[in-house]
Image 1 (cartoon, rainbow, N blue to C red):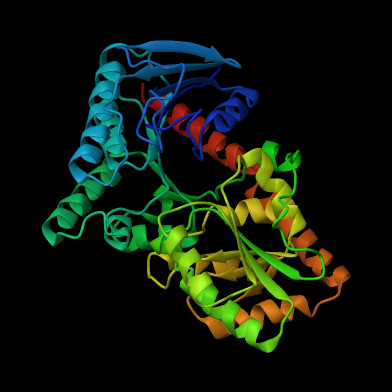
Image 2: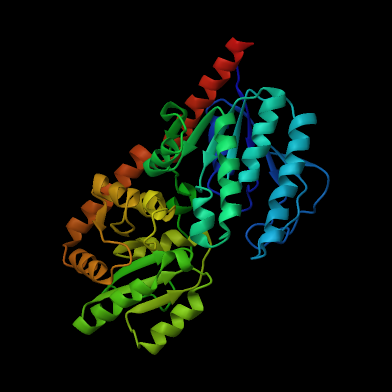
Length: 412
C-alpha cells in the first residue's frame, strides 16, 4: 500500500529551505505519495516572488509532487508584530485547508520553525487523527533568546509552554543534532520519541559547480581559508579578523575569504580597512550553483559561531556543504559540530571566538602536505556520503513514516 505523506512547511521552493523539493522528490522516489502544504514564496525578502500572486488556493504538480499553496501575510523584516502576522496568517490558512479541504494523509510531516506550524499540525492531528512527525530545525525559545528576536522573559516563558504542548501532541520528533535531543529529553520528552537525522547539503548544485572565479580571489601562493554564508551577529566574525591580524603580523601565507552577505558585512569591511588587513577578502553572495566553484578553490573551509550554549548543540548547515565537496574543515564551533569533525577526521577544531586557537588551527592546516589535506577532504566526503547524505536522511524519515502509518492502520 502506498503511504500518503502531507508535508506541512511554511517555506518551500523556490524559497531557500532545508527540506524542500529535493526532499519531496526523494520521498516520491522511495514510493511515497506526497502533497506539500505551503505558502506563497516570499522568504527571505518578505515580498512575493515574481510569477506568483497571493490567492485563496493554488495547486501545481511538480515531478509527481502536488504542491498546494495557501494565502499568508508576506513579511520578513525586523518588526516582531509583522513577523508574528506572517506566521499566524499561514498557520490559519494551513489549518483551514488541513481540516476541511486536504485529502486525508497517512502521516503528516511538520517543519519547525515557526512554532505556529507545530500548533497547526497538532490541531489537524487532533481532529483528523493523522500521526505527526515534527522536524525541529531551531530550538525555541532558545533561538529567540540567543538571536535577540524576543528578550521579554514572560514572552519566552509562553513560547516554552507552547513548545511543550506541541511536543506532547506530536507522535515523533526529529532533530538535527545529538545536543538537540539531549535538551528535549532534559525537558521531559521521552527518549524513544526523538530521532537524530542530520541535515544534508544541496548535492545537485555542489556536484555541478558553475560560474567564474572572481578576479579578487587570492592566488594559490596563499593558503585560502574560506567562510561562506550569512555574516550576522551569531557568526561573531570579529574573532576571525583578530586571527587575521595575528597571522599578518607573523607574515603567514594564510588568508581568509569571506563569501556572502548579512547585517555585519559593511561594519566588518570597515574594521578590515581600519586595521589594514591585507589577508582578508570579501566576496558578495553568489547563487548556490556557483558556491561550489569557490569552495573547491579554497584549501580549507571555515565554520564559526559565537560562544553560546545554544550553538554547542547546533550543527551549522554549511558544515554539510563543506563536507560534501570534500575539503578540510576549520571548525570553530564548540560542541556537536566540533564532535562531528573529530569523528570524521575531516579537519581541525578550534575553540569558538578564540583568535589564538584559530591562528594555531589555520597554521597547522597550512603546514600540511597537499596529500594530507586531500586525505582530510576525502574523509569529509566519505563521512558525508555515509551519514549525512540526502538518500541516508530521507530513508530514515521514510522508515519513521511507514512505521507510524502502519501503527495508525492497526489502531483503526
